[in-house]
Length: 113
Image (cartoon, rainbow, N blue to C red; front, side, top):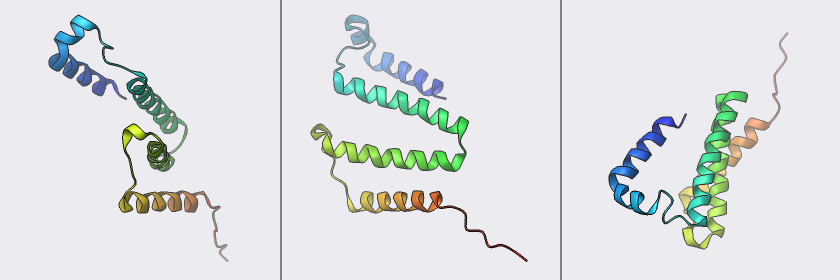
């Protein structure tokens, strides 16, 4: 799923920083924080592929929404990110939690005659 994005990122990397990559290597400038972001994006892509394969599209939407919510909450604890939730983010988060709760309720079908 991410082949085109990875190819474009590599091309951009070598066009913009090709000389530095050739001299100091591809991972020059990486630290634990950069590595953790790259790992999170990679694992998130794999997790999305698993959800799409084994669940339906609606559940994928909820999983994506909840992952954004969880990422925002975790980002508040990391001082380097300097994230403070806005009222819009808070209201969107509440709507996501409400939608997830409502979707998880059992079906209340009315029996016909």
